[in-house]
Image 1 (cartoon, rainbow, N blue to C red):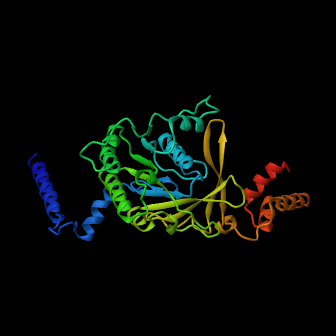
Image 2 (cartoon, helix red, strand yellow):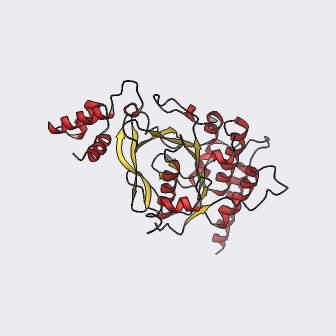
Length: 344
């Protein structure tokens, strides 16, 4: 019994000594510890899981951006549904079990949301009870202690996250939060706040943002994000949605920034998707991988009728979708969709 007590005392002394050794030095805003101490402390924290393949990991502040009307909200709700159900989206990876999600929707009204997730306002899709959607309460005025709505919202968020025990926060979208997010000071304040919420609450955050008008003949880069410099500095990861020149229903997903993995989904390996609504759920459907250059606009594109005629001729000659795509500069999925429309 005595030896056990001695062992416990020794253990307490050791733990206390370790705490003293790792004590933060008085260096203003910096936290300084030995490199080995940082590693030892990090060992006790779990390895971040994938939330949406290598595009977004746990405990990251991630940005999803694109031009308007390309499906950011559609994909974001699909990701939220996937995480709340604990079921991966076909073609993408998901690690871990179901999580509680808080989705801030500043884009759609409740009726518009209902329409997307029902069959003509009937046969409604059943979301998980762990999926919480929030809208702005327009009946409330701005309390006197806050300078603007952004400050009010940022102070409200931690309470809402705690109340609903959410581990995932999706903000749709950054443009609503600050109409001047292109300006560095606005982007800086918003991203700092979200970063702080992520670190203090252990919440993984996905923020949706728009791009200014861009040249669709060029590959998408980090410079296409409004307020790109400051936003990129304060996010952990970033991916984008591009429009395909091959088919109006085709989209591609491209990785822009990453910290927890290598750059996988670059210009030579974009994820090709189509947008479809099967009965009562509007969603992205995985179609495969391709080169971004195959989906950029060019000045020497032949007419749609000419393409259709060439496809019909090549199909009659027994060419596969892959070979037709290689010959015409299209993806297999693009050829497959055109053949479906042509009923050949």
